[in-house]
Length: 171
Image 1 (tube, rainbow, N blue to C red):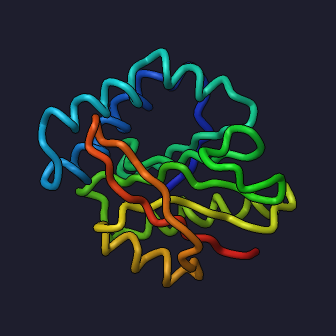
Image 2: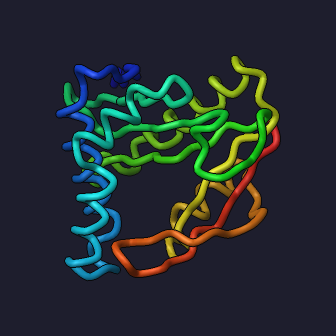
């Protein structure tokens, strides 16, 4: 099965918004109230916000395709685009999501490997990410890929304060 990665451009905004909302909802709707979930979706994934993120030269988005459809995506940040001050030698994996129907096909691994490739290309020494403390499958996946917990920070789902674990891998 051929699974190409495509770097997103502003022309991909409608597709990016659709997959962002779909995958975030699939991942977190069972553990959060509809009010908190909808508030987050409206704040994080409105067209204006995503257009700003796409235009930021220190952020990159990639789509992964499977069966001729967008199956998942990756957002990485460097420099000032990082959501935490982690330094010039770091690359953040801010978002890595795959549609549920494409889980267990190696797409998450493919997207993470793309982040590692970009980190190497940009000579970054660390790759880091935030993962919800209750997302046990994701935490196990990242540990298997060499990440270790190095901290934690708050994440707001609407006005519901949650905790993301900060996990880091030295390159």
